[in-house]
Image (cartoon, rainbow, N blue to C red; front, side):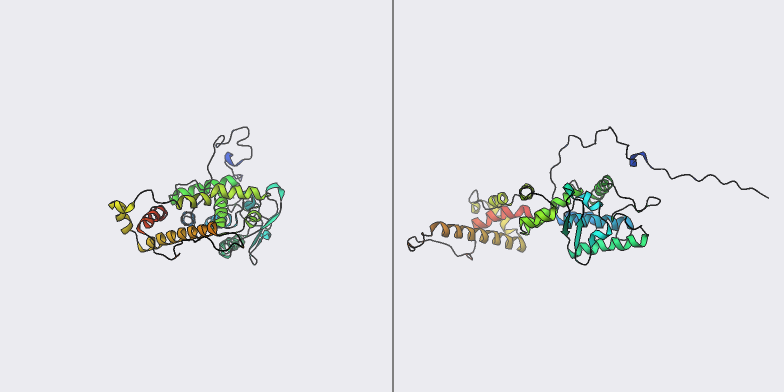
Length: 308
């Protein structure tokens, strides 16, 4: 009879970097550094999403996390703490039980983002992840179902952005910045943005939005008059002729919008007080008047950077 000696079963080994006390007493790598707020375009975010697998479990999880952060404005800690019961797919809501300051709030999420999150939840069920585990948990054995650390998410986002050729620093809070900026650009009421982001003070949200997108300053610069007679410069005139039809329509719309604002402002300033009659004749140009060549040139200079 041959006796077979089996080697003792080895316990799985983990990298020291993953241990809680690895950086104990060490300064973080970003100590003393200040990073500017980042706002991403939809093309930039989509280019990062294209780097995520649409079939693999890790890719579906990362896609769902990016979309959730982008389309709901959650903080990364709030997203990683979510459980399945906190996401209502039918009503399109996400319940944050322990937000900043340990405040509870309910945030909305659009139908398209819900569909992406639902795909990950379905894959999560197929993997047999235990009940009560976070929505965005580890999926590799033997540590399946454990909470993910935010540092892992940041490194993953950094790698995806590098593969996508993104020049900006792509990080979770940048998606929150982008969400707030998009809502402000769409004209959503400031108080609704405050409640969605979970700010305790309205002034915080106002400062948040103004810091990201100072629209009043941008509009003031766009409305400046032309700095010279563009009709005497052949290179500028050629630039106008080189505009595509879509860019030409944009130029015309910018000029007409500026004319309407000027006409409205002159009308208000020239209107007499109530009860004194119309004693001041206001000379106005029709809002639909064709833009002059000089105004076209000025608007072309303002519109050209937007089309690059």
